[in-house]
Image (tube, rainbow, N blue to C red; front, side, top):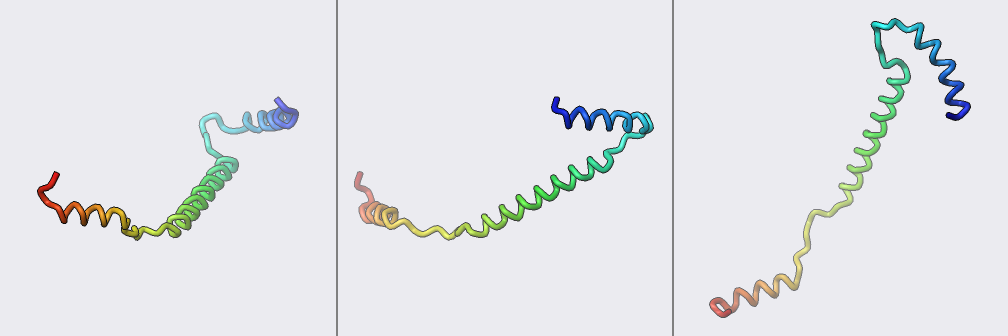
Length: 79
């Protein structure tokens, strides 16, 4: 463990013993983690919306496909 982690643990362990054993709450750290995750999801959704806005859903017809379908319909019955 690094020095900062062990220092944080020595300060947080006495605080944890002061908490009522029957009452468990996420506290401020839980709220901060949840808020950061919510902001990240919001940012990802905004980015995805922006990227999907750039997509052109109108498909241009393929000229080769048209010529193949025309030649196939022009000669029915021949194999």
